[in-house]
Length: 428
Image (cartoon, rainbow, N blue to C red; front, top):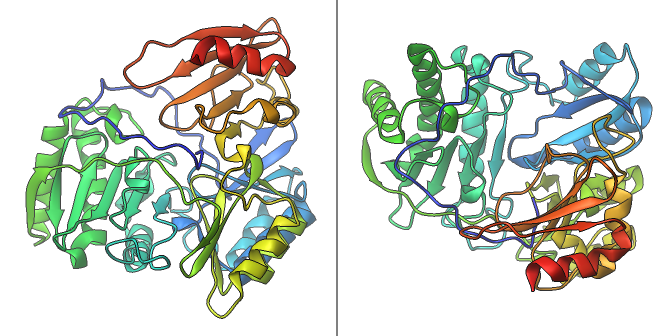
C-alpha cells in the first residue's frame, strides 16, 4: 500500500458475486515456497507486522545466508525472502522456528493479521490493539478449523483511527468511541458490536463461520466477498455462532475506513520510516534493529514503525535517513509502488522498479499515487484512487486512472522518461 493514499471504502449490504476457485490456494509461506525467476520465495507471516529485535536479526541473517541478502515487505506487513536455492526449505524452517517465527506449522500461512501500527504509541487510537493481536494469533493457532483458511484470508485490528479498517480485510475488528468493538466481515455494510474483551475470540468465530458457510453452500472460495451468501446472511450465521459461544452482540451500521498509513517522522513515542518499493538492504535492516527499542512494526504501506522508549527519536531518524530510508513526509517515494517486475518474475514485461525510480521526478506532490506493474495482474496493487502504470505487450506502458466514481482515463507511454506528459494527459 501507499502511505500517501487516503480514501473511504464503499460498503454495500450484499457481498460480491461468488468467485469459484478451481485450484488449491498456492499462496507461499515458509514451509511452502514459491518458485520465481530469481529463485524460491518464502513469505514469513508477522501478525500485526510485529517482530522482536532478535527475530529481525534472524530474518536478515536468513536473507544473507540463504537468499538475495534483502528483505522485501508486503502490503500485509509481512516479510519475504527471495532468491532462495533449491533444497533450503528444511534449514529455513529450522532457523525461523528457533526464533519463534513459526509457532504452528499447520497455521503458518493463515496468520494474516494487520493492526494499526501506531497503536499505543501516539495517543490517537481509542485503545491499544496489542492484547487483541496476541489473543487472536494464539486462538488462530489453537483452532483446528482455522487450518482450512486460505493464505489470502485477512484479519484487521483497528484501534479506532480507521487506518487498517480500510484494507478490505475479511474480518475487521475496530474499536469504537462507545467502548465496544465493531466486528465486520468483508464489504458488508453492517457489523456486529461485541465487548472489547471478547473481540479476538469473536474474530476467530467469524472466520470459522465463513468456513462453515463455504462448506454448506459448496462454494470453493478463499475470501469472504467471494461467497455466494449475502452479507446479511453471513452476519446472521456469525451471530448464531456468537450466541452459541456465549458472546453477546448487537447489530449496527458499519463505520467507514480509510487506507492511510503513518507518515514518516517522529510520532509520539514512535518513529516512522518509509521503505522505497518495500525493499530493505541488510544494512538498512540492521540499522533499524539498532535504533529499535525492543521491537519493529512493519506496516501494510511498506513502512516501519519503531517504538522510541529511552532513545533520541530525532537522532535515530537522522541515522536511518543516511541509509536511504524515507524520513521526509514530502518525499515522492510515498506515492510510488511497484510489483517485483523483471528479473524476479517471468510474467513481467519490464523492469518496472528501475523505470519507477528513474521517473520519480515526474511525481507531483498532490497528484494521484502511481503503481507500476509488469503485467495485467497488478500483483500487490494498492486499494483506493491511483494511476496504474502497466507494461504493455508490445513494449512501453499503458496508464489508466482508477478513481472511485469516475470512468478510467487512459494514455500510452513508450518511454518512462515521458511519464510527466502521459500523466498530464489523463489527470489534468
